[in-house]
Length: 128
Image 1 (cartoon, rainbow, N blue to C red):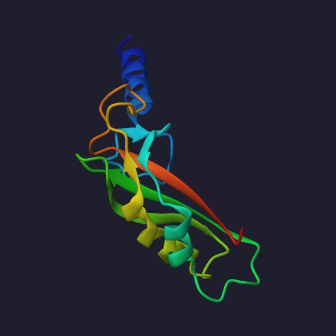
Image 2 (image 1 turned 135 degrees about the horizontal axis):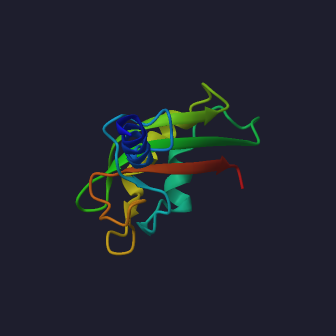
């Protein structure tokens, strides 16, 4: 009987881990449906648009960030960038300062408060 209990305990522990295998091991809370209190404006995105990308139809970036106590984002890093090396990743990192999570409406995947949790921020850059 003890081996069965061990398997159940490991199963419960695994359920508490982030679903993303690339997430840091310490990230036990993730905001999967963020509610934004503030997001970048079109003018802010225009000012940060990467130079020399006129020939590209679009760029896509996903950031991974930590939610601070005031809802702003910190410790951001580029999780993915398409096309790689065109400058959309660094531009999106600069854009992160304009995002602010609605702390009253956002919850982590376990229903807890978002402070200190990981959040993914997908950004699509276009010329339009």
